[in-house]
Length: 179
Image (cartoon, rainbow, N blue to C red):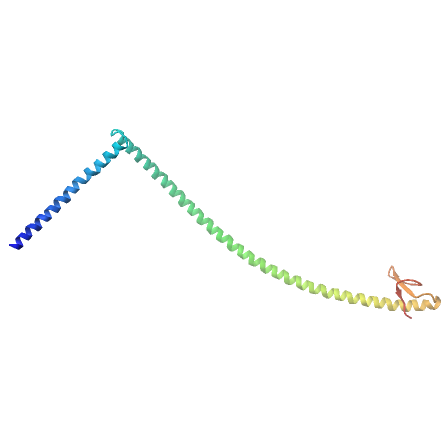
């Protein structure tokens, strides 16, 4: 008996739940409709103009969706353009790096060449110094020989000077002879 009574309670409970759910299914649209009706009254829009207002809003939504699609297309094109320019930028940066390396290498080669030329110039300057010294010694020796011979004729000759690449023996001057 207890088992039968429990079954009845279970059946009644299930039926009650089903009836409540079905009632909610039918009552819910009525509650929503009433809420919309109350919103219309509070917004001071007449019930006759409400459908026009809804169609205007739908048209606005349609226009906004169209604008959104245009913006998406533009964004896609701009994104593609940015991607192309980023590729070009990467290529330019790679070329710049190559040119910088090449420039550095050329600069190093030029620096080495400059150092070699400077060493050569220093060597030539030393050679010129040596040649000038030898020339001065040669001129001095030749002037001594020449002027000492002339001193025999003129005992006042004690100096010499160069004029037009010629040795002139003199009684006064800055280059003294030694006989």
